[in-house]
Image 1 (tube, rainbow, N blue to C red):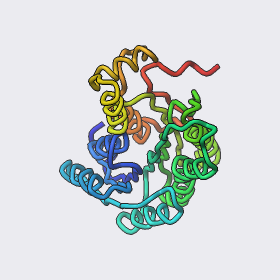
Image 2 (image 1 turned 60 degrees about the horizontal axis):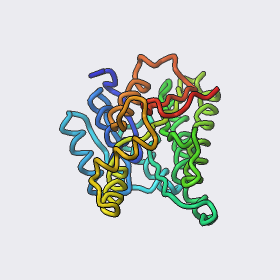
Image 3 (image 1 turned 90 degrees about the horizontal axis):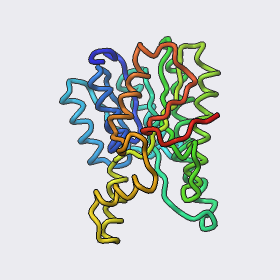
Length: 264
């Protein structure tokens, strides 16, 4: 796919680590210039440096897209630097385990602001920009728990399920204008956050991190026999952003090694 996205401008949220970082780097490898956003400045600057080493421009924007102000700052910086946005990847998101009866209303609101409303605000903010330039791509990153709810991640599950539905609404409304919208649903991916959770479990149980992962796979077997890697998800995102996906819109793609059952 090298060079397929030459001349395109991509905005990626949650780009400092994990799946978002790999998406940004693979988009750069495909020729896109990047506007990358996250809350952690040091890690975001490192991603920007890696993008520039690939010969592409990178605009790091430290902002909290869980707020309307953060979304506005991100779009303003993208337009000021490039004048357009061709590709938007709404990757920012996070879930924290908590029993349902222990959840406060604030827990629900905070999860929806980050995992759902950030994508709503940025998508609707980008649509007029994309329409004015003849089209674009919006790719939303959901989660397997959006399709297979987990009661310990209830707000996150609900927000990610809403994101799948919102993506279809976006596609139905704007595909005729050339704004193609799709959703990617990762399974269990070996990101920094997953590694950290495994490390804490290993310390608490006296196991190694690899033993923790092996136990996880025994408890919930993944048909391909391994956890996902950020690159597994990023490769699909880059394809959906490319000219080869010009007749794909309103679709949801599961990248999970086969763990999520087929929905009838």
